[in-house]
Length: 122
Image (cartoon, rainbow, N blue to C red; front, top):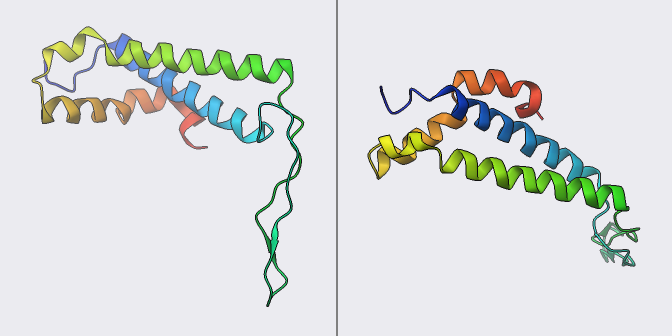
């Protein structure tokens, strides 16, 4: 078995981790900028162009459902990260650069990418 002949359960966990991270990223992009309600602040007006940069609108904070979903997804990402990083397969790979290369290869393994599907396209 080579360093990159990954067990099916490891590939499945890595694909699920890709999907969970993509879902988390999408959720966070849709959430308000602050967990708690906070006031915004004005931007700075450039003296020559009158362009306003910086500043933020007020944040309504997360709803209870948004906070629950964010926490659940983050917990799932942690769980899957631990599952992938502590998988018994890694004990069969020589420590050092070969192990790093094998871990990186798992992330882009064709079976993993196919199982992750459109999650990585976002």
